Length: 143
Image (cartoon, rainbow, N blue to C red; front, side):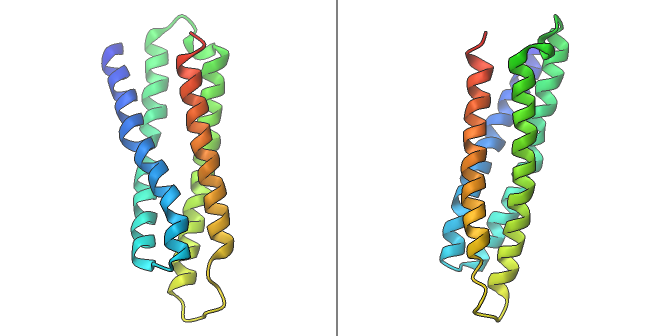
């Protein structure tokens, strides 16, 4: 059972976290180019991959429970799960900013060009990417 959970955990990490990182990193360029159609696609993709990335946490916790021996109580597991939750909160903020940017760029008003959202999305997506790398480090090195 644990090998199936390992495969699911790693599969969800590969097929959701990677594309999610690429999507959030591409959004600022779409905002700068004022490409609303691309931005709408990126927003939908970011939401889909964000929801899918919850599978990484779910199968990771299930894997930790199946291994027993207090695996989930280890400091690096606690730190990884905490960082994942922080990344999830940042992704909710990114999603909100993407929706706001789509509305701003879709409006007739030339005043709002979504610069605030552009900067915040760029900053938060960079932070989320670093969080993923720290989690990867914590899953491999402390053992």
